Length: 408
Image 1 (cartoon, rainbow, N blue to C red):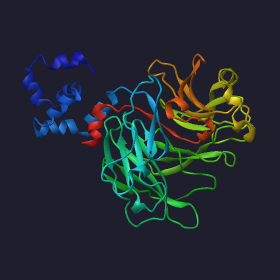
Image 2: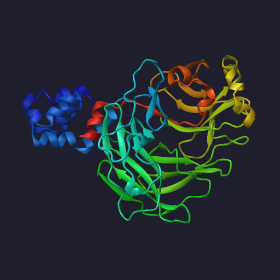
Image 3: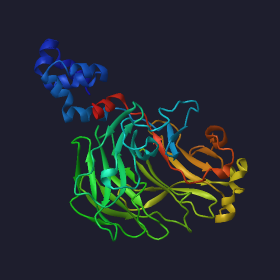
């Protein structure tokens, strides 16, 4: 935005005349206004309302907003409670404890988190049910605002196998929800249904798709306007990605692996525009982080972490019963990888080890425990906690302006 140009436009006429007669200049001025004032300015006139809600203005406003980094993780090992795991400041309070949404026909304790994307959570009353029995929500924990999605359109399909969330506030203030619904009782043939918060409707994909064996549409990762999945890499060498704009399903190469993978140690996720994979083998003595090239040509090694120094400080990594059952050299589970180069901070890896979660600095290789299950979660015995079986979702505070555009 050029301040000199703005000043030159104001020299020949009065400010009032310029604002009244020049839509481009008025839009530039409104871009500098805080959200709370902007909300009031929408009531000035129909013209101002049109300018403020125009897609071009909204898109420019979004592009000027700064990115936000994850500050915590959510963990939901049981339906009736959500644990809050702060990453930077241990005393940060949780925005919520239970997902007891009002006026839900099902028991609130059945509501589960399905996915997260850039600050929003996708939740559901049922994990496995007929489409007309499912209530799907998009929840903003930063503002405690909730959107209830309409039911899936008829005809009623057989099973809802997968649901996920796509939201990129730098490109649009609107989110999309993706559901894969089977159309066959004998195999995994089905359709993608895409819900858009902009239109408030579900759209059916133009083509039906058949899922190959060992490919499960769960734990999808949103990256570059597409949703990505990796199946069981012990049996297949590629992944799938669904382009939300084109409605097409394509393949991408699977990451290189050495030995048999264990799902407890594997991780697949995105951070700061990078797609990552961590493949933990049963006899792993190190952690290798792979990154995908933006053209999908291949994976390359981004980080390599030696587990031996960590095990010396936390010897429980070699004494847990999983070591003897699965033959692991070190017991760990990769929970999340968070890069913060844009914020001029150190990137780090979040690892679960028996009884604790540690934060490993990927720049200076330092590490520390940030959660203790016995202290923070009230789990007295490590074996009671099902090691390596719970999922986490990143918590990013959503900007106030984006919130208003999404929910009002």
